Image (cartoon, rainbow, N blue to C red; front, side):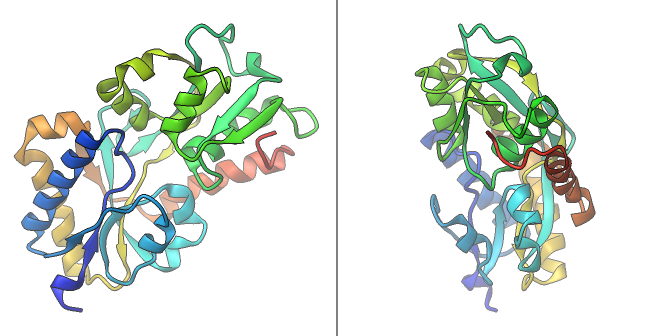
Amino acid sequence: MNATQWVAALPMYNVTPSLEACWRDWLADVLVAAGTAAQVVNVRDELTALWRRDDLLLSQTCGYPLTHGLSDAVQLVATPCFDAPGCDGPNYASAIVTHADAPFSTLESCRGTRAAFNQLDSHSGFNALRHAVAPLAHGGRFFGSAVQTGSHLASLQALAERRADVAAIDCVTFALVRDERPALAQAVKTIGWTSMSPGLPLIASKRVPADRIEALRRALREAIAAQPERARRLRLKGVDVLSMDDYSRITLLENEAVELGYPQLA
């Protein structure tokens, strides 16, 4: 495949247009440092189609899609390490949040309330919350209702507007929202944390050669070090290289919830 035919995109942590431009700037430097040309594309919908493209040089996915179908089409490049509450190296948790003046102080006190989650295939917003709730559920039920919002930002907005009572928010997203959209962050409060698992991995098509993967790994680190102020804004500290075995933690958490009789948020 000719180098000019590759595509790249970082669709996951764009909480504002300005921050999206910052991610694109960092990605452009990664590509230059890797010595690889690629078309940087804007993708907001149909992410699964992007992630399964044969010409995908670099993108970021959630660990749940990775472990539930993507592993036959992609290879792991690296996992970012973020400077954010709830992160530990390449691992992360979700903040369990409610609206700022809610009477709830623990997840258990949220029994019978309205849950919001971003997507059914999200580890941070759905799977991790399901795992946290499972030991508290009775007969497969805990919440009064659960609504899918489409994104972590939409879940936070639902809490702020009192259309929902509790949600689990990817801790990196939440840290970036505090930085970029402080009014929204101040409309909610944290009452707990989910279990940790490996963070959102950077991936490439299995057609990307091994030497180019190594070049990308070097370039990711170089682009973080090249502009410390930009890295601070993106909350990037570095990258680690993990294996699919590391990501099996996500299916382990899912299986533990199912074994406790809690396969859905309900």
